[in-house]
Length: 362
Image 1 (cartoon, rainbow, N blue to C red):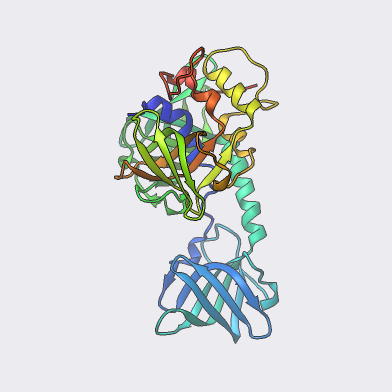
Image 2 (cartoon, one colour; image 1 turned 180 degrees about the horizontal axis):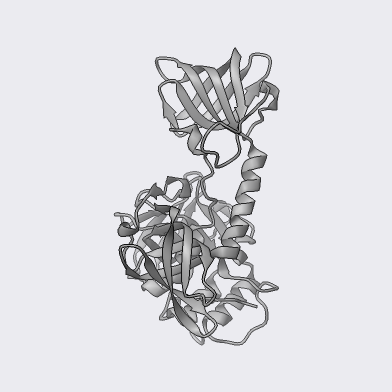
């Protein structure tokens, strides 16, 4: 079993690279009778038709000539501040809720109302929220849960320091499900569902001494970390077969549309390894940063770019099948990180939270 401390080092920061869900509450359910919510794939202005990609598949939407077309901002809770738009203002990539008369098979709909969140607004909102997570976000392993707070272990200059997180009155509390790696699928949750050993990321304001936080958002989950050597790659099926270096058993890693596959540049991997193993080294990435921001800046690669023998670290939600997981992130180029100094042996090792946490790498 992979130590909890090692999960803290990689799992949660990898899991939370995906953007937060920005679907406004006013858009309602994803798909119901007479309503469809999805992303615009194609448009035909002449016929006023839109193809939406929803969670249930594609749906053809014909916009009635008398339909009301509105635009709202990401995160809006109602239509009070919506602005009226024209059909030509809708573009591919926009998120749309169509409401009207659905066909019997639910594959087409004549829309009497269209509510749009533009792709550019979503991108801007995501960038702003990511910046705020970087500025006011914390990540840690839960050590205690009470009726109105959770305590996590955080890395400070002087070592490990506890942080008591108390949700604000209107705080959003969510939790990953065992069967999905999509952040958008994280379910509404309660503080009471968080357990000791869980990974928690929270965003909010801390007290001057850094010992307490009033959180606006709390996301928790039970994640697993797997290190292995690639045995084979099926690029067509997006499957990677690895040999788990801890259990010495083969297993299958499924790469979904929501998974991220990246490869650390050698210099960055060496720099991270030096810090993790307590060896003096120069800057691994240039400038100050943490593991999440450094990985975030690393370009994505394709499954086909992986080769047999490559060492990888995989983060996934903890499911019921130990022989197959769906990756939140598969990170290659990690040989220096996994290799014990002075040996050829690869392992997630005996790192504890102090030596394993990157803290601020300069």
